[in-house]
Image 1 (tube, one colour):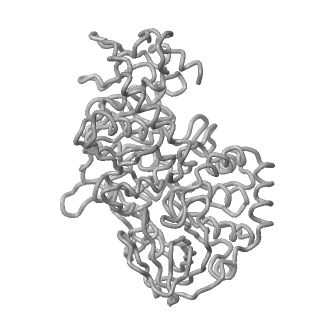
Image 2: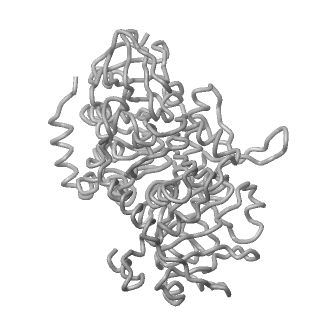
Image 3: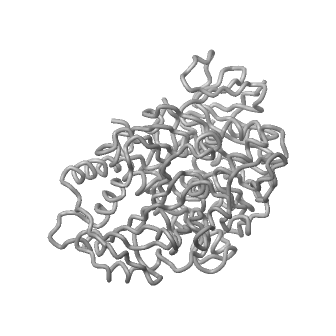
Length: 266
Length: 272
């Protein structure tokens, strides 16, 4: 992904992926509970917990509630999550008692495809369901995370393959076909509040629910963001440019990343 | 009381061609050694059930043991796709693989219903997704008290469930701790069960957060130290993350996969 890492400010000493992770971490508030997917969401959530949100409660679908890992887990079930959790519960319990009733503030998801209404595909791409061009891992916990958390934060790299007019399969519902769909479907959580990419930040328009570019990362242009989007991306009137990563954020993020290659106990 | 058996005998007696087989373990305590024994004994036409058919089912699918897969997330956690699973779905290699696809919440509740002796489970789930269009086992149901529309999924009743645990005593009482996933429900939902354990001990010393499966609820127990590798057994081993990373290259091509299977499964022979 060297091409991507050059998208940021040419003189900056951080990559587009680092900017994305930092921007996502900043979205997480202290003293909230966050249901964390593996990969980018887990990295960003742990960055937030190690910097501005020390009381962020990390919930992993393996049943680890309040995990406080000192190194990044490779899977949602690494031993460090159980070792550092406030409680380890069964998988039926994490979904039935904790997620389903709406106890969790933020669902933190990735995506293989995402559309203008924030619907997410992680199931199949191309062809049809029975004979797909690409078979992806599938749903996991995401459909119910997207349905039941009070709000959803999505972290995903922005390109034409991923940001599509229409997802090939709705694995997790954002705003469906537009305003009122979540209520019609009886989904009790609020849906995607923000989508963080390697180019900037998208938020649903309050009236149309359409994902709208509201912020660019430093060094990125609105034309770049629009060119990386498979629909006619709306740009907010008050489009802003976000703050670059601070030295402290980068130091913590890189230290965390360095632990990922070493899943073993010290 | 559960019978203490060898792994080879346990699989031979409890896992049959055409069975619905659940090998559970949510990242932790995955019964890899039992999966390898199923491959060695050449089981065919299995319906494989598992929430996260990760590397263990990639191996069983690539070895040609499976006809059908019932699952909710088929990837290599933190690494990427399962290439043998993809090859089976996209190219029917080594044979076609039927899919029955759910979400984690749906699968977990299906086991709960099975363990509870109920025909189905109710949850808030799947609504608005494309899953119900492709999985007939996901149906709407009206709450008789509030009139609200919820989702029903049928109970899972595997012919046999296989799990790995830390310890058992000589009466076959099984003790596990750490991330215990859905193993208790999967064992209680099944008609038969085989538990592999790190060690068989005289007495099970209590451990915080433990789940105990009484020996009279388990069919057979086999002592298989390291039987969860490259997954792990909390207190005994750590997850071999390098194996999971390396699996991506091993499994990407049919010939490298077959060579791995010959070397590490067929030639390795039964563990006990």
